[in-house]
Image (cartoon, rainbow over the protein chains, first blue to last red):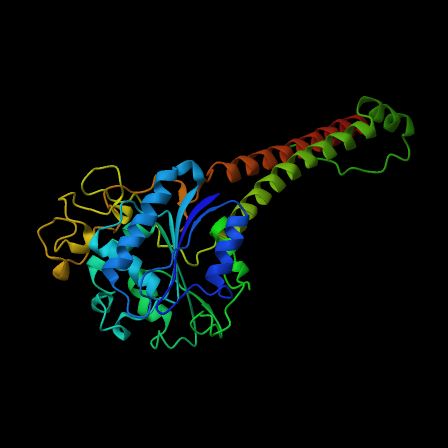
Length: 198
Length: 178
């Protein structure tokens, strides 16, 4: 069993057809403790509000106790940056055991948000991210408009992680048709699972 | 003049002597002894060869994708709080979380000028013990440096024993023939 916190991205209203929703349902059916909240004002998000909710949900999962399993964070796009920003700010009450960042957006593309100032190659960001992420896993695609330099160059290289690149997955969004994703469900159960499996 | 060793000849003219010789060392006992020694040597050799490649194969198949790099030697714990630096949210224990700390490891060198700002490199003072091979996954196994020489010694002993027995048999036979 595991305790899983899912953090959606920008302009996302948790569509029932997207992989995040389906993953939450599948994991709950399997008996995992899953938190999948709607983060406020997704069109014009306040990172302070998003972090407040992230911290509150994490505290709730932590309160269940470690007997409920590993503490896992799965963030998509801006959701991944929300985690990194929270790690840098040191607001998270506890570190995750494992973290999966799916298509995290390049901070340079979000200059109007505080996360746009994140310098991923700075020692502070690297140390903070690794210390709160536990085992960090990174997934991206070769055709993601939110990662013009590619997931490996933008995130993998600075954070010291080899990213799993899924060909043609674009931004893993609902509009990209990224619905059922067996690989991520398997990954929750087993960190060595094949994340490319649809 | 030293006694010249006579070459073994067929004992066609002495069937009784040959029969006596076989009664002292019956043929089936000699064959059984040789087969037994060979089997012992072979099983020891197969055991030594089989265990090493299997272990090596399992180590090679260790997944290396998607995980944070693991240290290949003992990790550093700068503030001695029991949490290794690579998962410590406040590496130097000064109360400032790493993400906001201008000197993460507290060595007096600002992060921007520090070649190892978070002190996550391996601790050079603690090296892995001898005869231990370590992989990226942190898995370890012990190697036994005496295994091969012991097998060779057993093998040489077995071969020597067989040769000695054959020579003694030949000598006894030639003495009787003479």
